[in-house]
Amino acid sequence: MSDPRSRPPGGIPADVRVAVYHRLHWLWPVLARPLVAGGLRWLLRGLFATWLLFVATLLALRYVMLPQVGDYREAVEQAASRAVGLPVTIGRIAARWQGLNPDLVLEDVVVADRHGVPAFSLARVEGVLSWTSLWRLRPTLALLAFDGPMLQVRREASGKITFAGLDVEGESDPAFAEWVLEQPRIRVREATIVWDDRLRQAPPLVLEDLHFVLDSRGRRHRFGLSAAPPEKLAARLDLRGEIEGRPGQAVEPGELFEHLSGEVFVELDYADLAGWHPWVDYPVHLPQGRGALRV
Image (tube, rainbow, N blue to C red; front, top):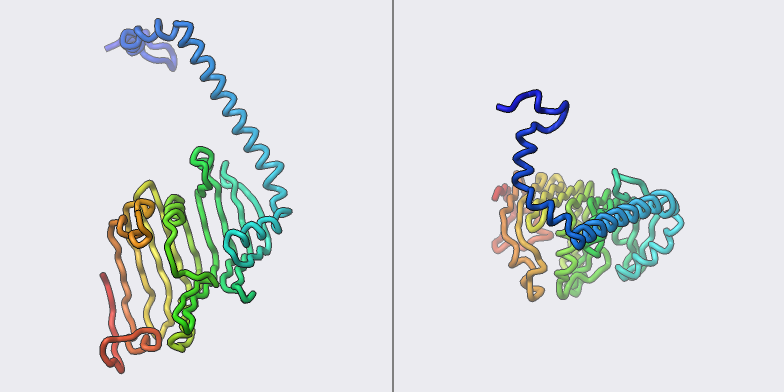
């Protein structure tokens, strides 16, 4: 046991310092070499310059760019319209901070279809930018949240399906799916989905109070979905699970989900099977019936 008197106040015990010295004594001659010492000095200078650049960028965002972000609303609308291919309007843009991360908030976002009819609206969109975007060289969000979205999904009399005025038929985009799964936290709160089936000439089916959560870490993704169908048709639907993999591994669009594995849980405590007849075809005649599902 070492003598307590050999321990400086608040310092490291003498025996520990001696042991460290004997283990690392070979390192001091190496560090004393001119080439190594010069490389370390340049490394420290580079780290210091990087830190100064980060601080300057942070200050410029905080006091110059983000306070004026509302002035770029029309430019953001035009850029979003070009990206989506449909008219996009934004009621208000504001910026704030979550710790050291810039937080951009868009309110009253409306996407119109090709006929100018609103097909997709969002009460609020929040995106918290992650600093990992700098070395990933692509936008990465610490949080992507949608509040109060209203989506219209329509099947035309020709059988073509459109989602918010966009044609969803054709090849999938693995790159977009991979980008979504790279975001650490995605939240959809209080969404409403309207299914308009003009092929069946069925009344619109409304799915309300939809909540969706997606947490991703590397190749592992946990999700949960909860929604309320019309009360007379079914109880609240609960869907959750955990999957592993990346859609980007797919070679062909049809293989998009073949490279994902995991577990999924589905629960539906009550459903009026006959009540779903306007939107669902059964293999047998079903004038009445009730059921439940837990898988």
